[in-house]
Length: 164
Image 1: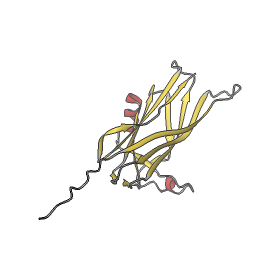
Image 2: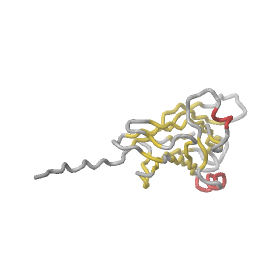
Image 3: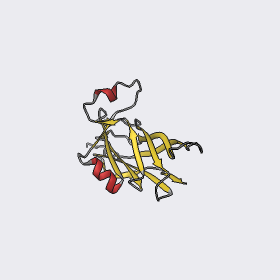
């Protein structure tokens, strides 16, 4: 008699979170901007490889919050030769500027990372600038992670909320 051991089903799982510092403007500065410098970190917590990682950083209100970081085109070499060991990213959609102004959604894909190994990390280093001179006196930054194995995505464990 042969007995087959049922193959253990492994679920795709991951964690995503923001690690950041907030810089407030000096009182005597003319430019009244709050700057947030940090990372959006994705960790593969499953026993399988996660393929084609994509992140979405959603800013509210969309017109008041500006996302920066190592973002360019797939072939932009200058972004990749900056001396840091962080991944360069590009917008997934061609109409990214219009989309981000309307919805606040910045959908990004890493230039070189095609998968996240088991127990591996992927990091989006970013800088977020919030104008304090607009009609809104708050900003909310949310993060989401998607991949082939997690098509519905997972929200970040934390959000960045600024009230001023």
